[in-house]
Amino acid sequence: MTWRMRVVHSTGYRYETPATQSYNEARLTPRSDRRQNVVAHRIETSPATRAYRYSDYWGTVVTSFDLHAPHTEFTVVATSVVETMDAPVPVRDANWKQLRSDEVVDERSEYLETTDYTPRDRELSRMARELCRGKGPADAVLAICGWVYEQLKYQPGTTGVHSTATDAWRAREGVCQDFAHVSLTMLRSVGIPARYVSGYLHTRPEAKLDETVEGESHAWIDAWTGGWWAYDPTNAIPVGPRHVWVATGRDYADVAPLKGIFTGGGQSTLDVSVQLTRLA
Image 1 (tube, helix red, strand yellow):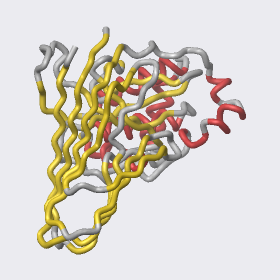
Image 2: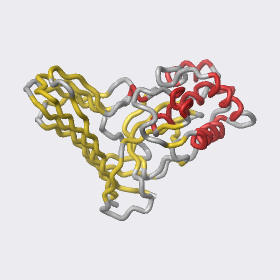
Image 3: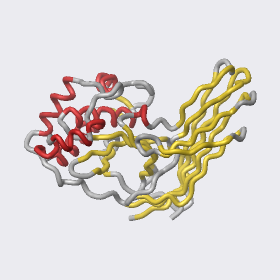
Image 4: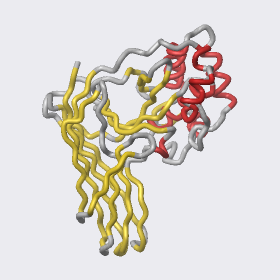
């Protein structure tokens, strides 16, 4: 099955008093691969800015821009048209011995280490080992992600953008970012290289053509078991035509959609909206 989708991601800032300078980085550009083809993409700002585009260490396309005129509002709108299809089935080419080889550990080391968002957690590690018992690496990924889906309740407002996997696990609640971080913590603890993926999810599987739905940024995981493959632990489903991926990294800190600094401005408010439309 294939989809063609338009994604419009709008971010607006309002400042209490005029901001005199603003520096920003946007990671809002989808990427093409064997499951996804980017047909068109643009990022526009208001007020207008000069943009610089480059790829970061993780291969994510970054658009940076700065504004040096006083302003009380600043808007960034990313518009993309993307063709998507079903993801490959779980890759089962590597066994546990191969995952623990010096070659794999060295090459994938950054996706095996703990981070601020995915710290070492004894309880999660113990559970991950139990879930892996008698299973190969690919089936262990499915078991761990399925367990996270069953244990955590999707509940916005319980955790925040800086919450760790341990925070979410203790609360037993969270959003997609938390489901991904808990899954990553468990997968890495048993030696499965795993990375964080940011993107979007169209929420209506039976959406009519040209029907626009309100959405938000979404997150899932990639696991390496002889090759990379994706799974969505928030919904316990394979990544498919309704998923649009943008960036990968060790955790949320590597893929934040928009981050920056400003001078002046006093207090600021943030408004974010994501609209997804199935075109074909």
